Length: 509
Ligand code: XMP
Image: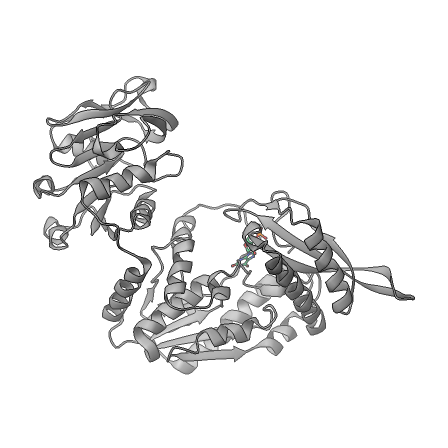
């Protein structure tokens, strides 16, 4: 076990993730955790994270200096490095010259004899973010990296296994950063790298059982990756103490509702599927304004969920599939509302529960998918692309009818089939069909048609905040177009959306 001691830096979970990527189990603990509690966990190493403070500030967080007498190696990053330096008798001051304050990508030279840099090139770009300077390095430490502006970018006491770096090895911008972390774990701490997501599953199941005891848990299942994995994990841990309410609003893709239900058949839990299609369609009838549609769906969803929750009565926990990026993004300030995103979960006002539990809170998306696989969820659920909460309601432009939804479902299914058949899934991060409200004239056989135009959308993106349109090969688009027009009644023209985000958004509404 590696303990990541958290001093409030913005990349702290990322450090934990990097350690896990190296196949080493780790836990993030607040810096206020008493030394005895840390010791009791028998860590093979500590990583001190960055943090917003300066070590010489009055209110700056500290550690019990006895931590350095445990005989356990320490890697200090940024604030963690300065804290170690100061605690062990060095001196840290505000950088006097602007040149000693470093932010962003900086070419850094490493000492190849240091264990941290073993088998790495002796220079590379590192990601700096510090305004403080180690004026005096503590006794026993050597300088092991420098930049053109700063002579002491990394310090090492090889004998005691103490290392400090001013840059952030955990971010992707630091070349070989992961290798440095791996070197610390393997070369210095003696980790073997045999930890896996299977182990994480076991630990989580045990932790959930301990926390929940004989209590009852309620979860709103959307069928998305996060809520599905969360539900499966809880089902694995506590079986019938879990009730999953799956509100089928009738706005899902073809066969999706049944697929979600089937995926949970292997667990003995209370699975409640609410067939609410008619309710939603009645509420949405004649509504064509996108935000209005979103609001109606959000509200109706809450109402249906609330009714089910009332039937169940008081529960101890409300479970949510919050994942780590949600935790970071939720602190992101008040950006303009472009679309009111509706997601299931987050309904605490309406349900009688004592506490929220978020078992995926520390995981990144790809780790969540991996955990889903460990749990035996089918690949189509685990690898599902993002799907908006309001579902196909915002992919039928203008007002909705069941017929339009069915038409779109059929067309969308063909698009997905052909993308899969062409092996293009890995090249396109999200793809779907949109039924527009434009009709145009066509000719089929010898007859005139006057039918709807279907738009295909495919995007490449890493974060869905910005996106480019995907260069899906013409022959694939050709096949999709031919099949849809021939097989789906009511569509006689297909267009491909070639706008990036911004200025467009990924969804049309
Ligand atoms: P836009 O259209 O804003 O979408 O570029 C960005 C990503 O978010 C998805 N999306 C939603 N996801 N609830 C969600 O959970 C929503 O209401 C919602 N609306 C859009 C969209 O599919 C894309 O991946």
